[in-house]
Length: 132
Image 1 (cartoon, rainbow, N blue to C red):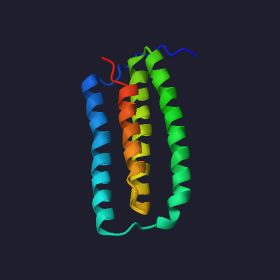
Image 2: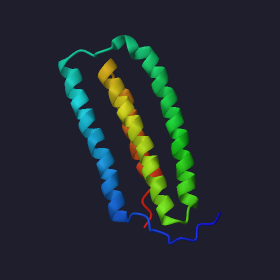
Image 3: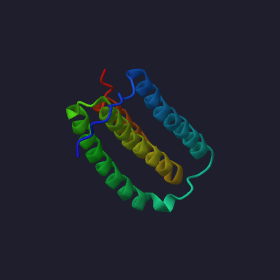
């Protein structure tokens, strides 16, 4: 069924940049909090190192596939409102990998999952850019 209603434009480039910074800021702050907490106290659940590693790897693979899917959809989309939606969803996927890595870091004491997740988040910003 065709939608004949008026089309709303997507968020402008300035609003998307604000959204992107609003996603990145808390991830950096939470990572800093976790780093300070882990340096002061021993890891909270070191026995979860092996199971969390497998879960984290599976999550990263799923997030990478989701990111590539939304990158393709974003590149092919002509409607600015839908492109904006694809931007935010792809960036949220990247953010979730960084947050999951930060929780892993807090529980196990290894910063690598957080850094990889942060890299995935930055990759989401590059792969699904703001189109003017």
